[in-house]
Image 1 (cartoon, rainbow, N blue to C red):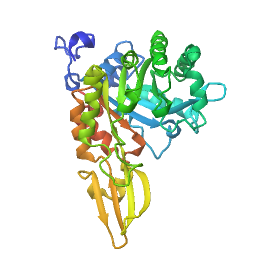
Image 2: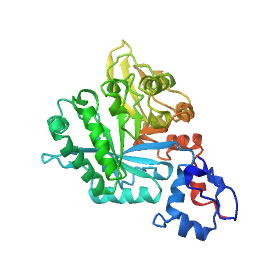
Image 3: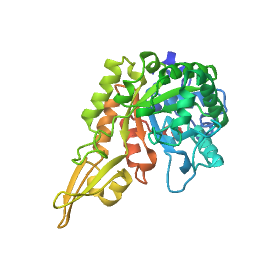
Image 4: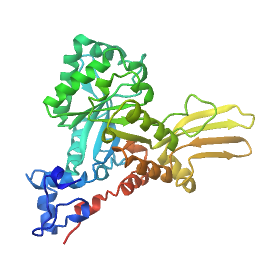
Length: 373
């Protein structure tokens, strides 16, 4: 990122050249704590944001709002550029809320994220909202053309209530309803008027339901390049391979002509687990977190992505993205807008995969905060 984009920030030693990477700026401890880490400071706050975004790449992490201050889960905000809290859905009065989330706790997490120079978006709907869900009729009402203004205003009110930086639209599958593309365009206009950003989460199937105008309305798009295999297949294969990532990125940039900076590659911090008896009868099928893999199959968590284990009574097959594959995908994402993670709470206790993403984007939050002269 050049000086013209950064606002010509320089470091503290006279006529040194404008900063282009984290290591170019060093402060005394007193100045770091009182200036660079003070987001209310008119110069220090913007400079801190510049340093975090110095490569222009995003690290977008979805995180369950209901875990906002849980001691069991770390949202990883020092490593993120964007925290997406999920999921907010309309009640009977069409006011948006997050089931099981405590508002005070969510507010505390948002404040912490902002202290870490991390933008906060509130994510709407989610994959669990389907044609038969309790929210389906409410979204049908909201997406109807005559209610677009009302829907957009509800999103503006939601973002303002939480002091959020953006709204993330995650209507999927059958819930990408007629009128949704037109709503996206209107929502972008209304949100922009209030200095609120707009992102969306889509796979190729969902993308095919959107108009070009809708696709280009987003500030960035989170590409769900996973679930290519899993719940609906008896024979398990890698559900999110490097090839799948390339295929999804190619669709959005080549077929839909979205600029690369707006295309954020999604990676899964979860996998799929199948268990069979020796006759081949399926006994169990479920999703598993990377945390589960790291705890129970620690020796496999670095390199293996498709694992088959046979015992005297059963055969176990599971697929996930290990450290090496996450590193490879992160390197690939440097040609695009960065990495999106579904979701942070599925990482190991020491945030092994999130730190792998940060390391491969060469983003070191500890150097940003504590590089003292």
